[in-house]
Image (cartoon, rainbow, N blue to C red; front, side):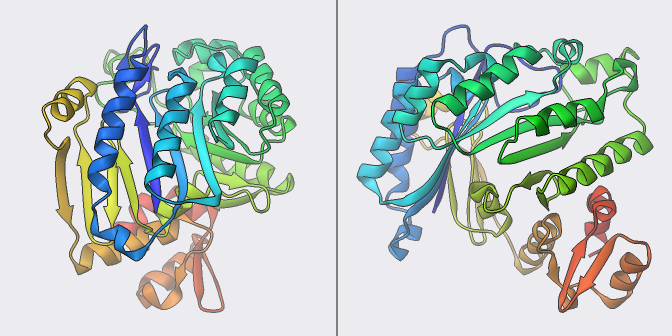
Length: 365
């Protein structure tokens, strides 16, 4: 079993963000913890537990989990451990912003059982960070890495965003060099997308922002792939790379369709064919829990075709790929001829060029 805990609170909304967040100057840590643990208790009777599953990973995502009082993180982990077995080598990740990382907070996270930090760096260019509405600067990001190392964290993941508007004059190669100089065990690289309802979408609608052209977007992705491979990282999923043995176990569980529980506003859960998701807004989620009602916004059951398509999409996202026989011969031949895939033994894997086209290749299945 894999557990995702969504912490919605943020100090501000980043320009590109459409996640389920709640901007709060003061985080209601105690109330939040009581509510998510109340939801957690409703999951204890789920039939999936009849298989005597242990909790292999816990992931505190957001939002900005690093704004939550560390004692709340500890309380959640402790309660999960009391109710269900947590594997001795469980991966417990907390997403953090550099401006929240102090010696005291890092030590408290370690004491709470967190053994992996996902640090939202995004760029080492101060003007770019200001445009993104990030609260930290480049120097602070480097200091955060040093503090986390000093606290004993030996598994760090750093996030970068590529494909920014050309007008920002962001030096992508310089950002890649800076992040690799910190030698994180894991890197996540996300291409900028313009999502409805975000500040970025409003800027674009007014003509204040011009999205990056496809050729530059592709070039930055391919340059990053080359730099990662040269530095000894395995680009094991379209947006993720890791040193040997440091792949994100929690995210890998999603890509392998393992069972997962999501608690907190906007969190998703999945078991085989079953999918369900919670109310997105913090206030609505809180009202439902306090009224003794399930905080579920919707659910679905996948049919055979949807299961196959989901498996194909998730498999093609990763360096493991799919059994070649799962791809119709005509498509397989085209992908191989165009350099979008390679075939080795019985497996077919997308190349980086293929990953760039993933969302257009999958519908052909």
